[in-house]
Length: 182
Image (cartoon, rainbow, N blue to C red; front, side, top):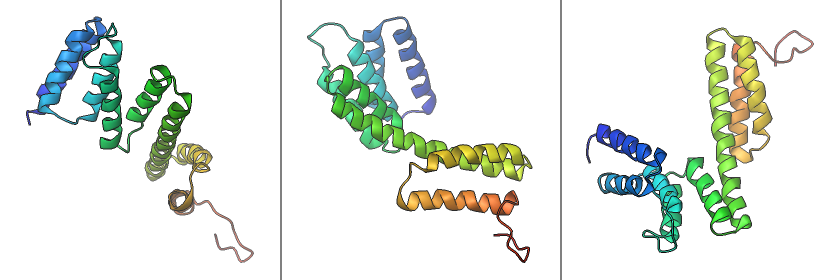
């Protein structure tokens, strides 16, 4: 494995080629990077996109290779919505398969909801600790609107964190007849 700076420089170089419309040079750079960093999901997504940008029917690598790269990237980075979004577009545009595309988009949306909810609850906790209750409540309200999309233990975990934050840090809760908070 080479130093990470080499990867950054290579990705930047591929990006410059891509921006300049030199897709074949960009693809060559990404293929070179994949030799040093095999199975890198970001590079696999780049490679797939660059394959799709190549012209002609005699593509080497082929559109099948592009789809395989995206499938591998989604398996390697199962917590990221990015490969799933790319797979969704690939199925929709290249395979003309809206049903399959919708499945990938649905999975990506669920991951995005999960990531955003976790970030919103974390932001609310941090803002509360900083004494920014109004901003913390704003984040909690957004998180509450998303948590309805959860099922089972994940939903209970997020709701528990929200409840604890509201009770402990924001002084929220209900007051019983004897004056104690719930």
